[in-house]
Amino acid sequence: MEQTLKERWILGSLLINLFLSILKLFFGVLTNSLGLIAEAIHSFSDLVASIISFIGVKLSAKKSKDFPYGLYKLENVAALIISFFLFFAAYEIIKEAFFHHEERQVSNPQYAIAVMVVAMVLTFFYSRLEKEAGKRLNSPTLIADAEHIWADFLSSIIVLVGLIGVYFGYNIDKYAAAVVSLFIFHSGFEILKDSIKVLLDFTVEKEDIQKIRNIVLKHPAIIDLKSIKGRSAGSYKFLELEILMHNLSLREAHKIVDNLAEEIKRKIPNIDSVTIHYEPVRQEGLRVAFLIDENENIKDFETADYILTVDISKDFEIVKNPKLKLIENKGQIIANSGVDIVVSKNHPNDFATRFMLARSSIMVWETEKDKFEEALEEVIKSWKEFNKKEGER
Image (tube, rainbow, N blue to C red; front, side, top):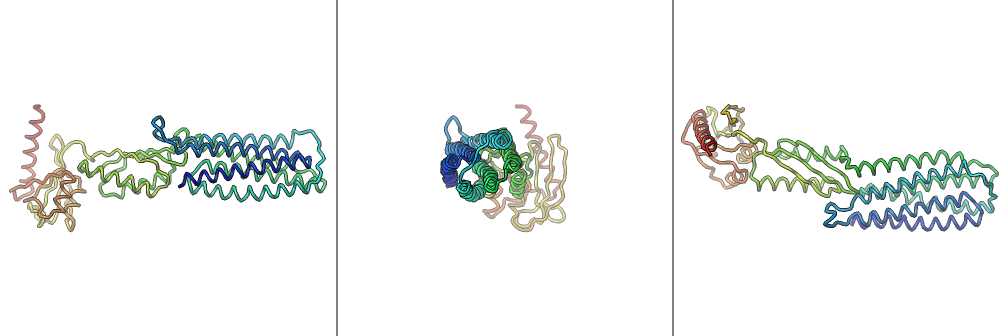
């Protein structure tokens, strides 16, 4: 739908410029107005630019085996070409204002003035509407084309002032031409700069990066967002994220990543693809959760008041973390703690907790020990034996 709207706006621009080129050229020859003839040439350059824009928009959505990421950058290439048309228009205006030596007598300047008024009304309203559509559709080509039409409107003011001066016997158009040509050059420079940034894979806007960061870090399974890489191509953005997650099962981690990608696409417009690389928060060591009461006696899932987590390094250095109060949804709390093992008197009875632990790849360790220290020693002893066997292989 957006692609069709872009094509319609560019096609409308093409038809307007074709109409204005013919109208200005006809009346320029009829009234012998060099300014109007120059303006007709300027409108013709707009026509050529609109054709380039139309081709760029038409081809930008095409994908093939050779271009799996699409041809979106054709929009930026088209915008780049339009910027050079703006530079050329500014140059032509300066040349016409200060370096043209022929003196022409304009006949019936009122006809030429009427033509310029019609041209100004059309270009003013269409450029404003097209620019708003370009922002709404996030299309650099539409915005560039709107700026070009706006430059046509400004140059029309020059010609109109010159014609009015002729009508009243004054020649002041060249001074206005110098000022307006600077505005046109500035517009061309901005379009050129933005197009080159995209073609060189400049990163996405800071506002979008902050939105992405907020979306990712609010998820309870995400520990940290290590990096965000992004680039734009035409109207679309491509993102690459690297995140740290709790130690979840592959299926659960994949589900979370898919949901994150969909949420980012939903909340930030014109995202073509989101690639997320996820890593477990720990690569080495062992993290164990113990279900305990206030006196650090081992309890089961139904009677435990606290969860006490212990980090054991590969050198068997032990780090005891603060106790965490268990209130509701114990399975979710344990899953979000990023542990490998949960030590309890028995397995959970309710299916929800069992399922939460299973999809998070958390092993339930049943123990007959009553005290936390005794259960910890039991786990460490078994883990040492496991590491020894692994080292002998």
